[in-house]
Image (cartoon, rainbow, N blue to C red; front, side, top):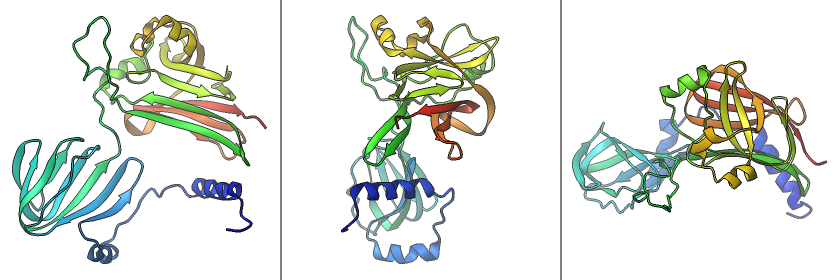
Length: 311
């Protein structure tokens, strides 16, 4: 690649990714799949997205299934064939039309295959969530808890040539939607909510921001949600150092005070979110402007964002 700089290649790759988002619909047509199936042996990947992957898994009559446990939840749909299936110590007969769910980490395999098996296999790319304390030992004076909860992230990154001009990043727990949350989002509450799951939801920025009209200086913030009668739902950005000095865990969000208050617009979400989702978007029609969105169940909370990168 003579005459082509690494920076130019990087710019081209970024532009390509930005101008061509993944298609909302992707067709896997039978007449196009068949030649690929004819060439494949056991496994044929069909689709790979950030949240889901899909493939065809085929085993011949009398064949051996040598697969090992996976680190993701999995669903098998039997398209044709017959066999026995053992998972987590239980054995059942499976035939065309059966659907089997297998949790991440569970040992499983097909055996005693009496007819050629053809399986449609779905993998979730979400890691299992059981809560950061569920696997811990009996509480004592000092107790370590492994963190196993699902987390999400969103980021806006500025890049000019070979230099970064700044970025803002949000990392958050992703609790499942529960109708019990309706009360907090629709009516005033006396206490703040952690706005996530287990560890703190964090906003980390190395550029100055204005979110919902509130000036947000460079820094690391812990994020909570409050709902006051006169103002509705609001994000509160807490000084992380101050919270650390108090040794507060996120479940103690109700003990916090002060912080930068960000007003939110509260709307009906066009698509319900089964888990809490934060998203930072870019307004390509207006330089350095975007939006912060929170989706949770049928709710959409939004605030305009103004970014001030180093130029």
